Length: 119
Image (cartoon, rainbow, N blue to C red):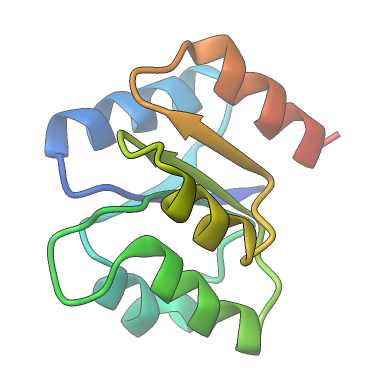
């Protein structure tokens, strides 16, 4: 079973993403609302994929969290964000994400990336 972590501080968006994953057959999804919470629970959850907003509430953004995670583990990440400026995209690319989706995005865009991971 593939475990997916959704790191999103907007509860409605996180719940919608969780329902989408469940409709695709992914029954093990965990919603977290901050990068700090992800780092605290990473070993406990041991995800196969992280879907992470870049701008999160708290002291740390998603890119900073992935920089830390990448020193310990190699977990695929897909970034979702409303911020598409060059500096943000450049920083995100340094963490070698599988994808980068700009909100609002179409469900099929996410599905294509996820399917490429779990084929």
